[in-house]
Length: 197
Image (cartoon, rainbow, N blue to C red; front, side, top):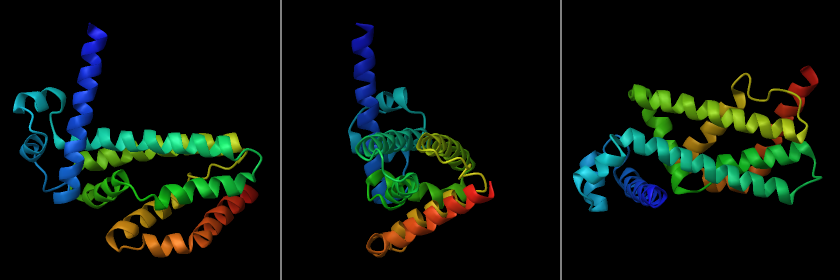
């Protein structure tokens, strides 16, 4: 009984997040209120507030959904590319992350733009950054890359710059067309770090 109730609760939370995602993408994160989400989902006010106290909490869970989705893609990639050059693998993983064209990536770009105006979002960004860099650092080590490739922040900033400009400037198509140059930049940076390590 308890397990069934938890499943229903998780399903409701997922439905609320989907409604919130729709609102965030249509109105922008800063302009979306709890009332907007309640109207979008058609659930009672109490039902929504039972699961989420704020749109910030919804955004956080959506970002964690995005991390889980990206991690599953990376696991699949690694399984299918065993034996490939470690730098090529890391470069492809990072470029694919940077140029992903998903609703969750669009939301992440909104977070990057809004975090300077909202302390909670800045805190969420730092938490996501730490979690993602820890996960990617582990992958780099599994591939045999000895340098801490995220230590100085260059790759994180480079990736975030690609994400924001893909969304805000509409540059994704151009980047995708020339992604070999982006990948080469990342790979060369990693190789140089290893040499100087």
